[in-house]
Length: 240
Image (cartoon, rainbow, N blue to C red):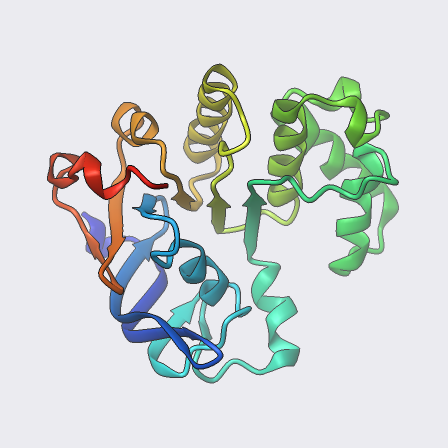
């Protein structure tokens, strides 16, 4: 039963604002270990702002929030790197370092997050690249890879520190539909294997209908969980 799962993310009566601009108000959500949760909504509805709040990029100024044991409203700047070590983030535009190979991109992240044992780092890099079928291309530069391959590397990077939470912000947004399904299959495989909580921001209706999960809809300055995707009016998503 869900109440027996470990609670990893909780927002209670949270207002999400960037500087003085209120984006979402009275947000209440709970995400448990092993949940696969979609966040959907129009452009500008606050989907990415939820992700940025969870990783401490947008301070939580009203309401309360806890992520992996860290209190968001009390979060100190020096604590943010430690919070982020527990979270893997996958972006729409990959955000790979263009001047480093695939292997070097991952090695850089491990060194930046405190790894000092190079043999252990080498082992985890090879393991993660193998899990996304990119080990044989570990020597290549990002510009030598297709968009789908770059996203696979970005997913391997997100898995490096065994995160209990993976936040994916439109990870298929720059990919064609066939590649998008391949990436989605990879996410579901990772979900089965490692059981992280995955929060997946998307406007692709086909994805959350084909790969069921919880669905949060951002609209009218708030975010609510849907009982069924049949509640979604396609008109709500047309301008995404």
